[in-house]
Length: 244
Image (tube, rainbow, N blue to C red; front, side, top):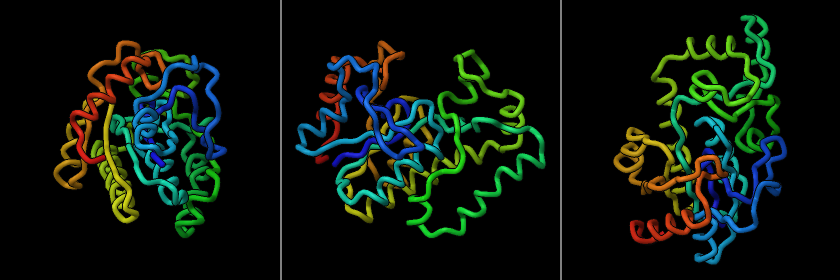
């Protein structure tokens, strides 16, 4: 089975991953014709495929879903992870800007840190978060998502720059380590310019990084490519990547 994780570039046009249910559901917007290039790749490899891609997902949320599936699903033989911009953050459905109330809402995370790995990934998340968008897509321009900007500014102001980047490097390192331990063929990609993460993948993790974002004529589409573009990306992949 091929597991595809990451941000919106990892989303399959025909399905959408539901965080609360830990499963996919049919996407009502699918035209019945557009297939992700990773789906087409899996078909050629004669294996099943599943996407846990999250629109606007930050590094922590997208890696959490991918790591959880790597840990729980023994049928995974291949994995492709799309690295997003490091500056994205997940936002609470009903945020609080009050200092004490904010800390109180965080307490259950301390409880989850006491769990073992199986318990951690099998226990439902207690928070409902909004991951559509990011600080640059919600503050710099209106994307139609109701978000408490005061809370978001407060949170962004308190997080030092290196924490965003280090969180991302730690996340992709964990994914790589889990894949190697389980004998899973791993590949990283991105729809953005992520030079630092790319060099980390290639030089430190010694993993393959594939540039899949050369086209993208219709960014409003799920996964941002139409059917012909997905087919072209697959041909590009087959030309550039050996032994996957």
